[in-house]
Length: 108
Image 1 (cartoon, rainbow, N blue to C red):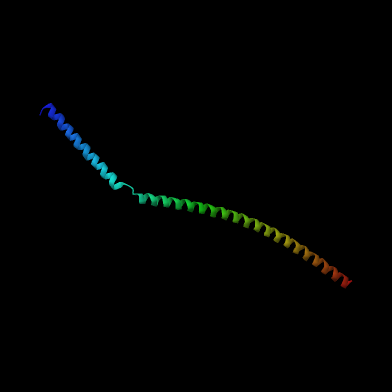
Image 2 (image 1 turned 90 degrees about the vertical axis):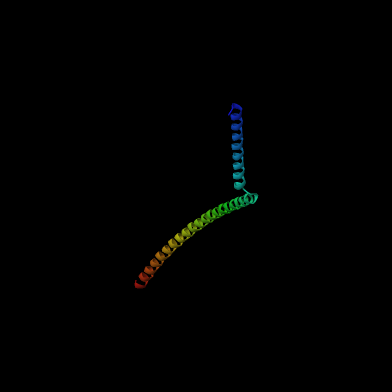
């Protein structure tokens, strides 16, 4: 085998290896390619996820506002209850004083 034959054989072997590599690359890309339908489905899913997150954020905001309103209403109700209990206590005390006054007047 002469030097020229060796160079040609090496070139042919390298060319065949290149062709096999290119063909393998084409096959891998051909079978792993993402179709447009898959891309559209992913887009739709991402849009639905975004809308769901917005809905969740709105629900959280509404619940926080509602909780603040109910807490405020509870505080007001407790204040009114305390005032009513204080008034009832005073009325009972006055009624006892009137009862004892009437008993003293009837006895005296």
